[in-house]
Length: 385
Image 1 (tube, rainbow, N blue to C red):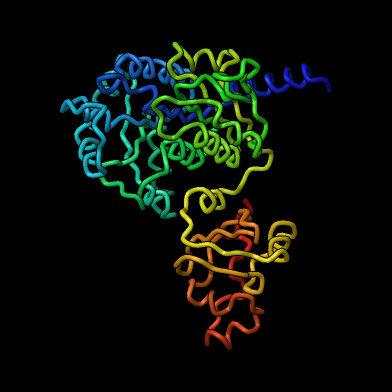
Image 2 (cartoon, rainbow, N blue to C red):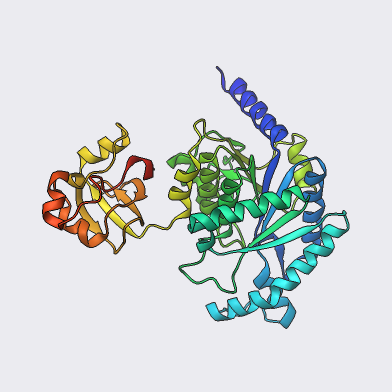
């Protein structure tokens, strides 16, 4: 197959996925929402128009937004040049959140749309029961014909409770509700293979079949002015959504009628295709929602057993352990070259695991005086990275 035919096939598949997308998450960040004096009302109004267009086409739509801190700055006249402490950011988020939602409420009301606010911290999704409760709330809002507007709860978020960025929040929400598409609107027009500012031969990548290390290495070629996440976090978000069977788009949020252009077939931005084999919901939760509490280094035999043969992880394959963790905590596994291999839920705490690492499973009872499991991680709780 020549490159022209391959490109045409990729573009056809891309448009087919846009046509079939019935559940869509749109994420918009500070890079396009923020103006010189806080929130850019013109951008916000256009966003409401665009999302209303998607909703009126029969799709279920979620908006994941930043902007509470920017709205707080505007409300009490705190200059953008003032660097904020965590406490100040939390206070400004508390001040600005009501203004942000008021602005969205007014903007969507012009198009006859009702919205609902959902504020999340990482712990809301890290707890499996609360994770499912959030999902049920969103699905119920869809039944009412309401557009959920989701933001991180910056007022109470601490380092332990925070998402790494709103790109990750948007991807997690997309996987949570099994969205068909994740649309990330930002201040760059696409992912480039080289830096377009320094290389005139640089070209935009319009379709990505798989997020490989080569694709991830291109992240530095597309510079965002205001966004905190950066292109790397957006590519990682696309990778997360792909694992859940969804497709992703990264492109220019400042372009007028961008969503209408996208869904009508205009080739703009970078589109990420879904993975052929969809990861199970619970394994996506383990791999992408939970924050690892520790690290295991595995010998080559253990790496092969879990990655190639679908085996559980046994204590005999563990070379080294770091971090403090309890039974049921998420722990990352690495090979001896420090390459990530897997992540999973451990059946032993870190203190006991230190005592039995490198040992055969039939020695666990003698060493610990009790044995709940032969495996450190059962394959049902283990995700290969």
